[in-house]
Amino acid sequence: MSEKIDTQGMSGPSTKGCKDNVFPKDANGNPIYPPFNPTPLPLIEPQLKKELKELINEVLDEREYQKKLNGPYDVPEYTYRLDELQE
Image 1 (tube, helix red, strand yellow):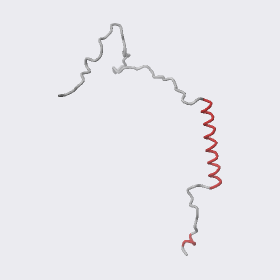
Image 2 (cartoon, helix red, strand yellow):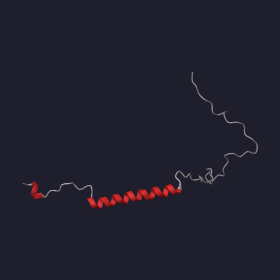
Image 3 (cartoon, helix red, strand yellow):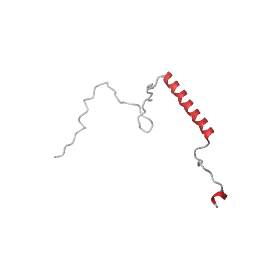
Image 4 (cartoon, helix red, strand yellow):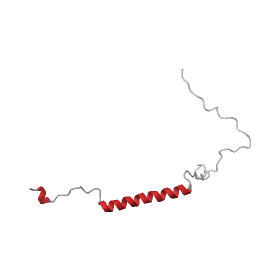
């Protein structure tokens, strides 16, 4: 037995004078929707956001300073001269 849901008759009767989901149409017949302007959700309080930003920048500055002291990380620890390798 085939179990199908008939969705054609699921919507209720239309109410006179109600214009839900009726939008103006453009020249091509496509609906023109109103702009979507959601309210921003502040997930982090402004003071905490400022403190985190300062902390992250401090850590990045310290990392840059250590990189300057130690040199770049992609250089091998031991460098050999060509004449040392040919012996």
